[in-house]
Image (cartoon, rainbow, N blue to C red; front, side, top):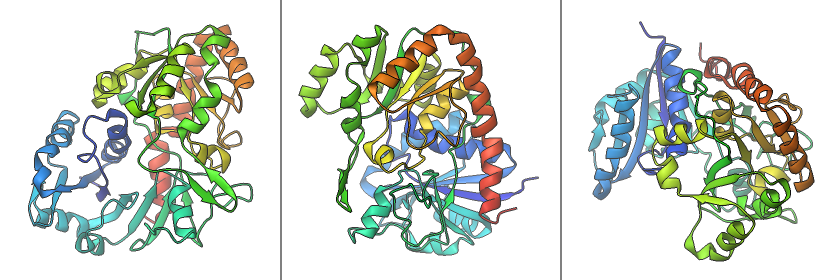
Length: 373
């Protein structure tokens, strides 16, 4: 007997071969399913790209979520997976529809949900677009959730746009991330060098991307003597940055090879010594309180995280398992602390994941905030 139905809407079929991005959705789907909810993932594709849904279908089947998806083919009534009528019934019967970044724009499906919750996983951009009159991604929703946990606080520069934000960390399904035996020697990370959109000018400041922060830490391998490897989605046009990374001692892994599926991504995380988390400049300079969905996977896998501070010092325990830094000197010092007792930091990493990011902890609290029993 299930507790009821929940719908998660977002973009998985639209981003095939990006294992880390897929995990953002799997954590919610698998976490909610384990709590007793019947879940449905809604996605969409242009009708002439229906074949691209194969990635989503295969992932969902492998993770025991076969039949728990409907990919809408835009401009038609056709779908891949559950039919449109079945999806509509599921939405009507659901307790809540969680719409990640407002990806679902289908008015009929959105209108059928009893609660339409916008889930913001990229804090700062949407809020500033709205404040500047550039774009508004929020209409049509009843509740608003963000992983920027400092939004609304006096020391956070992200505008609230008059919205009463529910804040939450992102969840991790712990039994999917049991610590592995094959401990690697490299500190690693996976991510995009730039991303789908550019910097934003807001109230006299420019808020940028990961590239603008990463350049501040280029000397880490040379200064620490440690192995650093990054699986970066970086375009060939950034050839100067690629050359500089290699010159400074960074190993560049192919993200399609090491993180092209959820399983490959998980193996890459579990085969690392630790993670280096360098955030988007937007998250850092606004003091957003954002913490990476990638980093919680490393923690759950018993891999320590060296994380750039985005205003999370007051939210999560640091010093063991999670080591925060604000500049290159602090980053070097945190590397030395990690080297002094790596086994202790690995144990602490898993403890932090269990206490603060477990789906069993995060999701019931989030649903309660949304008024879902």
